[in-house]
Length: 519
Image 1 (tube, rainbow, N blue to C red):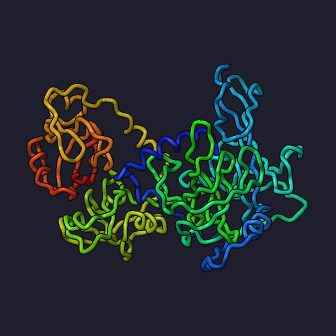
Image 2: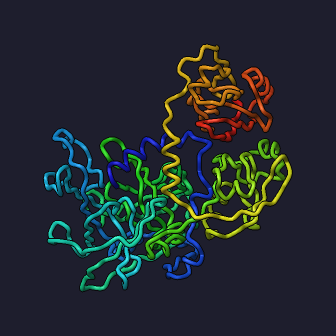
Image 3: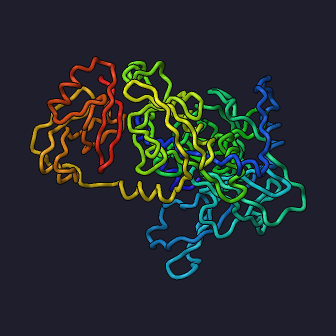
């Protein structure tokens, strides 16, 4: 795994662990169209129950049978040349390998080498699955098989990128020169079968030590972790099987030796060492997009909503008038997107998608992932404690445009600097102030905007976990507009301990929804 990936994920993972409300854009994590999926064959997955005893030969057998399907990947790329001081103690940003500083490709550039792992899933065609970040920006790719030794062989087998998917951090590469001996294919398992405590094995190329085998257990399934794209957390398999730099792209295997995940992230210290916390992309997710990867493009739909991350509690569901605790709460709606065109609004609860019940936020994501762009589907929502059905035509995701929107709306520094009115404490981990003309100017608010501005947020409080920030303006609570700190305080003071309320807020000109719980 690259040094830049390791360091990034270590910091962001800690923040996400405390974040209760997230911007999982349900419609933005979407899917390969069915029409595309039908044009390319996908490796079969063994969904038979995982049963049987472990013995002294179990892991030996897995390593023997699956090891030959695992490959080491070495890439060369170029980057802007670093200053002399930069060469001291900084990890290679491409993940691992050796730095060939001084071999310039032009003024101000240098050649760098990185390393990762992968596994063969189509022996006849020479197709290999790996991580996108392993081959991103590669000018040259060499693949070393289990029977080859990178230190002794003059060169590996040449390969090219066939398809990449930034969202899932996956890529398919293909050998452009085939070996004389037959290739070994990895077998696919069913990642939906995994449970906490299951034995797993990782095989990869950590620190250029090809085909290194490590064993551990599944620490958690469906663990929310930072995705490869900003604002898009992913649900991954967490394992304590040792995963280090260079393991990226290698397989995580069940006790039958079947691939149930692609190793992609680690939590690490500054020394880049393994801490017993690694993450793998579930193989079922990869199988869904594999046809698109093999054809060079993964096409996704977009619904145009963000949903709250925390589950619906009984009291919160009751406030929406829901018959149960199933559904996904709409936190915001993209202007001009499919949801807005269909009439979906912020604070609606989506309870059915295309005729199927929405259990929770993750279920909605999965449903949208399996809907082809251009398809019109019925969506049942609850609004003002009443059910209604709207027809939504799913669009195609434009990831570049989405990221540009996020970038231009992020990082505002014009938060209130020195409001003069005294802050008012709440029992929700935040302090409030009235909106003064100075605060309005700082936040770029309309002249007639009323409400209560958040002047500080306690990192240990409910407001922080719900995603509220200093400078957010509370404009409504439980659907009721508010115009002042006194009005907000009066409503919040009446909330029973351990009960939740819905807060509508303004941030950078956009409305958002948060659910906070009284401590």
